[in-house]
Length: 97
Image (cartoon, rainbow, N blue to C red; front, side, top):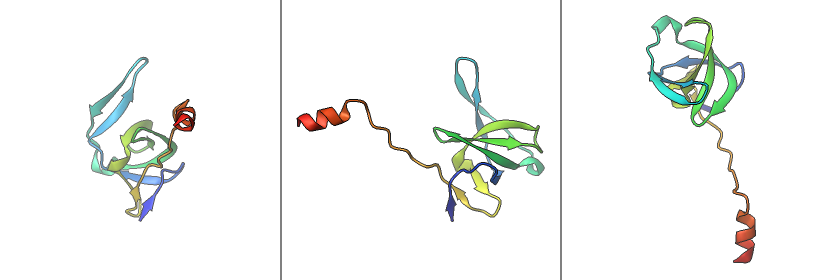
């Protein structure tokens, strides 16, 4: 079963990397999560294949993990919703053809 990231959804994190947001950059860092701290709760925010997860048993902070490394508490596959973005001027170019 597939489900979209939803605020408040409990997930199991099986990630070995996370996105780290700095003041002027984003990096991906290796992580190791203790077995007893792998349960988190989604905040509902997603960005480019990553999802923000609140991790109360790990350190009480929010972390950005790859959506592909998350599973619902009942084994559901988490999939990111794809939103098509149109380029400005694309319709004008199509009309000229």
